[in-house]
Image (cartoon, rainbow, N blue to C red; front, side, top):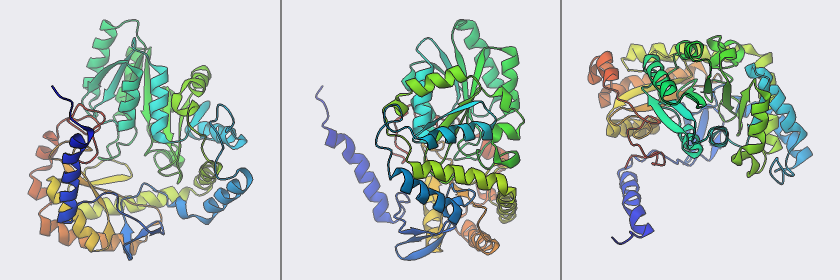
Length: 435
């Protein structure tokens, strides 16, 4: 059988994207020419941003920007090498110490991105002799780390602690000598779901050698007392063997870290994670940004409180309109649509009305369960939120995406299906744009 040329392999997908662009409903890679945080400029228009992960609005805080500038003036624009060789800065060391303390762990290891944290850490910690149990809707970076480790991979239904318990018991019986790692997220990035962490932690009592890896990318900085994360929200920090976090959400920068209490294991990650060893170190300006954000979060708890005040207002508004958005206590508030076409059309209509919010479609979510992913900032003004709710009230009726249009809430979620990274495709490398 002849090998298909690379161009022939890529052409159908490129044509698919061009078709969406021609219809005016292609929603991704939108060029933002300027940002004020809660508002952005695109094609000369100023839009209200309700799709950013900058949950605390710290990316535009003058104190944070000043810290980044000062760090750049001291260390330059880049580290000049990997941390392993010539790019390890005293700032990196201070940042790791501060992060570990913030999430309640003894040691942390900083990587250059959140994706590379998961990829490098999981890949170096597990081997082909080990077992990884994972929530089917885990993030792509977790899947890449799992596959790179070559460990035996066992999925369990999304947020189903009972299913996880059965899988853990069966795996332990079948592979008694294996290291066993259970991976879940603190806040699932598309649905905003929060895991049944207490039930999952209970499994450690029944299986003492079970390790839990919590990806808290969307929880650090906003969940729990003082924004110290989802584990602290549940009072289960001590039960988490690993807490992973990113800087690209509430901490207003780029980068990631893995924290834990076993200092030997973290030292191993520091020396064995390929994405750390073979990547340039985090630029000093990025690290200084995170340190400044942590200072502000600790000194100004009202900032986190304001985020939840807005969050409650938005959820109440969505429910009053009749939208289906779930009940999870998290900073991500999805508007469930169902139809991918309707999600694209609604997003385009929102843009026409001055609101920036993007749809999540298969394979980012299960097929036929498209949604508009919204996330607000603590710096949003009430007037901005009121405008968004007013527009959504009109457009939801126009596009027939109210809960009543989707059927009963329970029916919708019962047919939600299972997915990997919210996807039904087994291919971990599949694009985030549906084919």
